[in-house]
Amino acid sequence: MKLKFFTDKSFDNKKVKPRDIRNIMMSALKDEATASKISNKKKKEHTQSTFVYPKPRPRSFEIVSYTNDLDALAELELALVGKTINLAGKDVLITDAKWENEQYESLKQELSMYKTRTPIVITSNPVEHKLVYNLSRKDDDSLEKYIIQKIKEMIQIQVKEFFNKEISLDDLMIKITEFNKVTVDVAKGRYEQAVYMSFMSNYRLPRFLGFKNGLGFGEILDSATRYKMADKKLRNTKRK
Image 1 (spheres, rainbow, N blue to C red):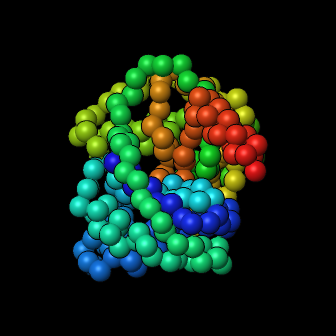
Image 2 (image 1 turned 120 degrees about the vertical axis):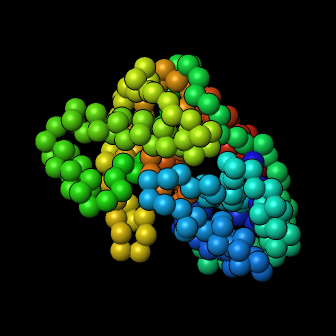
């Protein structure tokens, strides 16, 4: 389930990190147990966050609960709607919230084309960080194989978390058509390797891939979604 909040005016979403949204939500809650739960801080390493904070839009932000924690989302709605918060140095009023059905769905075979909205984090410790750094200096083929393997591993972790199932992804094919490796700040003083990329897959994939999904990393958009977003942006521009 997803809860989407709307603001009375736009803000510079490029300057607002998902971590900022998480912290605003935590501070708005009176119940410490719920605040601790939505923080994802008690999750173990190499497990999937149960609450995800996607990169915000210019007049909205959201929280996704793939475990359908309706009580936590309801508390957030009561705490935030009608509240004024500061985003990117601008005071904005949260005017409304909308519940949307978003589930973590089982993988199904369907030829799909994707592009990252936020970079996919492909390392989770200093050893992997150094390995990717060395691979990037060696050749693209070795790095691409590593990226694909990490994506598969994280999907398996997600399926285990949400469905308690072990799955084999031997037949999952990913063809990377373009990628750009970057270093991202996943926590204060902690940096990991990540990639922006365009790719094709023979499966329809989850919305978030790789590590650190809870902080909005690894969000991918399929071609149909990107077309709808571009069309909506164009129509909004014409109205102005």
